[in-house]
Each structure stands twice: as structure tokens, then as C-alpha cells.
Image (cartoon, rainbow, N blue to C red; front, side):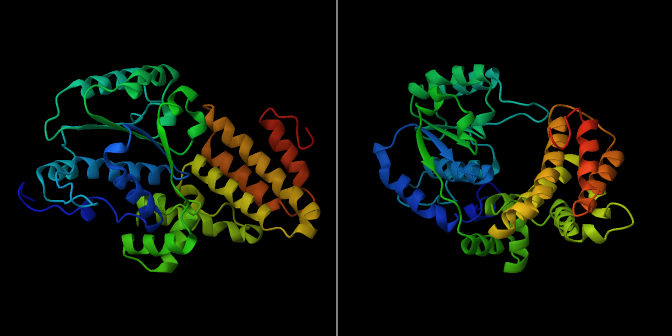
Length: 339
């Protein structure tokens, strides 16, 4: 595409989800009265990041007469090519566990420079809860008094992890959760699929449409759909773990199994809860303990771990399950089923 060709925002960003439109309109209408530092909070980290990008491109667009970015001005061209000189995106580097202080120092220096395209510079911090304490403290002065005309957009799905000193210096915008039908309809439209497939995609992300959109119709999505579909028949599985379990990382398998166990506990009728919940909760504890060990850096042999997890899941409804669960917990250094 040539530099002069029109670039439509829809080609680079999805349509604004309808449940976010009122908040976008409210932010646009605030105009000069709005502040310079915002904390965008959503249960869905992809939704918070998307809304941050939508605000950024609207602010940087040279056509201020419309609520949406025009898509054809010099600034919009640069934004959608990822080369905008007045925009800095800060996120956790690949292979790192947090956003470091040096990244924040570089961002502060960026804001001190003269704007190249207009009269404002924008800094976005994706998943700001991943800031180290030193990085968060380094950010405080910039949040209070940014150099020049600046807009700071911090997005997060875990606002409680941010220091109170950061939260108090930002205006919080809490993004509403998507109604299920609206989420399905929006996702189907963005992915060019039907509502049934969109609903299946939503199941992968706990009902978070923007995260499902970010995953898209990829091989990873198909693998995880097959993985979730395998759980219903575990009681009848006699030839070892389902083949879909070998296509994903052990951490992904455990996370999906944890969600499956939680869903089953929620679905137990009130009158049957005392009788049925115990085995599901014990299975959840076993899975959670192994998942916690992985997060702490443990590296068990995947084939052995998968076999043991399959054995637990398959036996959950049988009399031998409490004993197997106790052995499993003991192997992880825990007290056992009654500990």
C-alpha cells in the first residue's frame, strides 16, 4: 500500500464493541476538560488494550471533527503502519516477567521531545499491573506533571496489583462487561464467522469477546477447542489421555482443566452441592497445586504429568479417587487430601 493510499481504521482495529460505545462517546465529549492520565480497567486485558488504542488514535487523528479516526490523514497513516513518532507503547518485553524501570525512563524522555505530527504525544502502557515497584515509582512524577502536552493511557485487568500511588494519580475508566449476545454478535462479525462458532470461541476466553478476537481463527484456537471438547468424555476414555492434550503446553492444559472443574462446581444444583462438590473441589486443588508449581519454575516431564492428571480426572467419580488425589498431593510435597 502506498503512503498516500487511504487506510481504514477498520483494517487495523476491529469495530468498537457496542458495549464500549457509550464510554467512548463520554470520553470524546469531555474534550478539553479531560485530564492527561487514565487507567483503563477491564476483566479482559485485550479489551483494555484495544480501548487504549482506540483512544490513542482518536486523539492523534488530525480530523478532530469526527468521533472516529478519519483513517486518511498523515497521523492516521503513521498510526496504522506502526510508525507514529508521537506514540510510544510500553509493554512487558518478550522473555521478561515485568515492565522495568529503564522502559519507564525511556518513555519519560520520549514525552519530553517535541511532537512530530501535531501538538500532543501519547504513551500507552499495556497491562500496567506488570510494572515493577521501581518502575511504578519512576512513573509517578510523569503521571503528575508530564512534560508538554501528553496523554498517558494505562490498561490493566488486575488493577489491585498496581500501587495505590499510581491508581490515585489516574482517572479510572472501568469498562463494562460484554452482554453475552452482544459479544457473540460482535465477535462473529469481526471474525467473519457464524454465531455458533463465535460462541465456541468465547468459551476459550471465559466469555471475553476481545480476547477471543485477538486469538482469531488460528490453529491455537482450534487446538484449544478440541482440548475443551475432550473433557466431556474423560470418564469413558480408556486408551490414555486424549490426543488433543499433547498439542498444548502443560500450563494451558491445567488452566483449561481448572476452568472445567470450576464450571462443574457452579453447575451443581443447590440440593446436591454437599454430595457432589467434594470430588470436584479436590480435583481442582490437585490441578491448582501442580499449576502453582509450574508458575514457580518447576519443569516436570510433560508426558508423565499429563498421564497423572488424566488418571486423576478419569477417576474423579470413583471410590479410589480420594486415595489417588492424596498420593498426587503428597508427590507435590503437600499434606494430602485432608491437609
